[in-house]
Image 1 (spheres, one colour):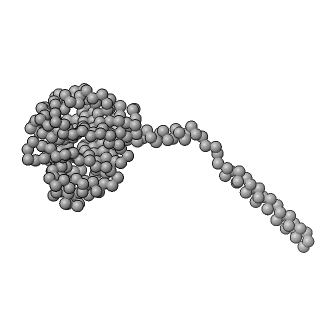
Image 2 (image 1 turned 135 degrees about the vertical axis):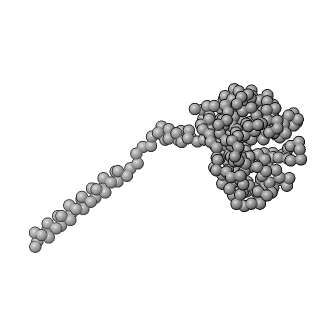
Image 3 (image 1 turned 90 degrees about the vertical axis):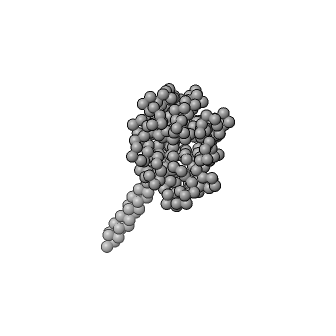
Length: 281
């Protein structure tokens, strides 16, 4: 029995040595490796380069008190708009000027600006601008005296900044009866912009309003939304809504699309969008 007792004691100490040896080895494995600073910087750079902006235009078709009082419709607009980073909306017709703020209340992550009411007829309209809070709106120009005689609704010019990218947005709801004339005026005003510039909105540059096969205006710019793309919800096949970019912006352009799941009850226009990177490709 004594032999077995001695053997048991020896075995016990052998097991203790084995256990402590494993723990010591595991402790060595838990020591963190030295961080490679260069690799960390590279990963962060790759992340930044994946950042992009989706910029959209949408004519909401007589957006006023009636549509703003429809909670289901208002929620639909807010859900769709929240998928984009910057969006300009046209055809806000609201003498009380409370409809657009109701829409903005449903978009807490965005800033909203609205232009003054304009129009030579009794039907006055406003442009609405909705953009994420991470984007800086540096300046806004609207309803310049020299524009008032040229346009039914003068263009709205915005200067924005994001991730070091400074760019200009110009939006307008072109008078359909004077589409060719107003597009000529727009070209005279903005064709020589040297900074990154995006012209977007309901330009009515198609069908009976405009010689769309020529696209005779802004010939040096890229018409991203082409004649083959329908931007209307009705049975017509017309490209009224456009996004046009100048040469300096071409290196930032990624892709575009038409949100065509809009019904006539929601608007007679589809939403048109384009995606840009703030970094030169």
